[in-house]
Image 1 (cartoon, helix red, strand yellow):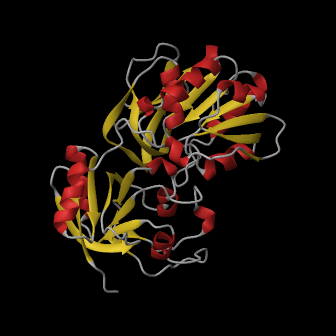
Image 2 (cartoon, helix red, strand yellow):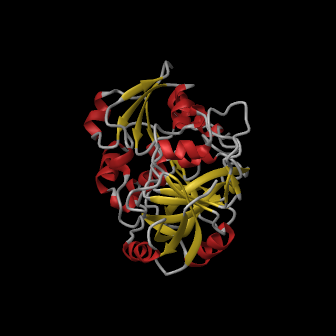
Image 3 (cartoon, helix red, strand yellow):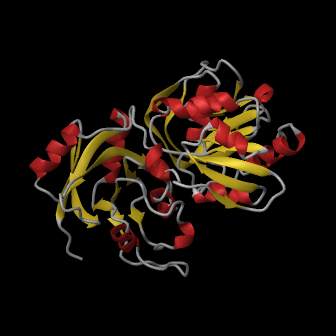
Length: 363
């Protein structure tokens, strides 16, 4: 296939050459915050994860698209990422599950891509300098450089309002009723909850009184994009609900619950994006391999209420908090793991135990 030359420019001026693929915007330029993901598979789940809103995903694995796409792997009705960066984009979809090639999926969902990039060099640059805003595209390189100079990252940005469901919806038929606040919820999360509970997924802007009116047995806080410090109104809702209903949070939900418990958050240099992060459960001593996708984390020793329950063995980042007195707990990583290992699925059982017996099972 003959492709149009394209260029990728980061805000610090670092430049990478490649070729345009996927959707070709009329402006010829796409901007966003560049992050890298280290997962070896699950590219469709990564691309459709709403937590990537505002970001451009660079895949460290060199060969992407080899098993095609299927609607069964979508984590949201559409991708919210700004674009993707790939070393080699496969034109052949080799899998019995595939319904088409990845590039057709990108074109259909208007996701721009740049391929043929030295993603090893790009990853090393982002590791050294942190996640950076930038631009890529097939426009004149001068225009791409100008766009990169003014591109914005995720600091202070609220993308939750873009990705949340506009209307409530229900799943599952369990005896216990869980209300899930959708900050950018993944389909795999809803599926795990629906196996155990009757679930009502509500928009992120749902008030505390509206949550109470649904008479939930438990409250679930989903993943989502952007800077948790920009979501003061959402944190205020959680403060109002703390102690009145059992709560389980994941990813952004973990960060917002921690803020409601009195903690603060900070931005990691290049975030955690991958499916191989070791986490230590301090209560059981168990080590689990986890899937992660976040740029922000809870500031160490900032909790006013509750305790740290999990830590990342790579860098010591807080991976979980718990407040038994408030009947709530949360983790920074993804126990639903789409894509990723299933080591942490027990956390959904822990939530069920909290709702059923009023206590959290250890594992």
